[in-house]
Image (cartoon, rainbow, N blue to C red; front, side, top):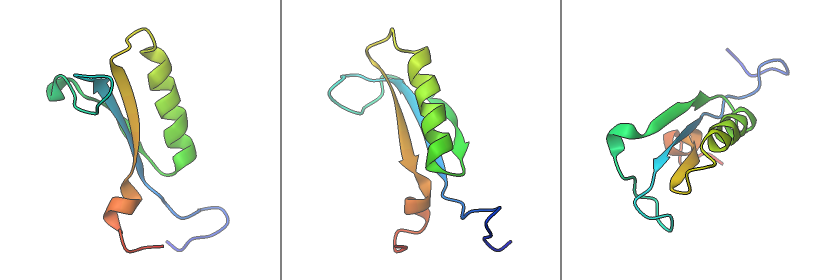
Length: 79
């Protein structure tokens, strides 16, 4: 399907997180417990999901959530 005003270009993002070994790093304590929140078609919806996940875990200082730009990994040469 071609891009139109109703269907903007898909720029995939993934939101995931978990408890870190050290809050200064990005290494997870237990990879089997990493929470994959989801894959989203644009940054705005990924940000909203990230924010909701981060708010749910605000009481745990070692818990971190991340947004990764999948579209940049899938097409690294794209501008």
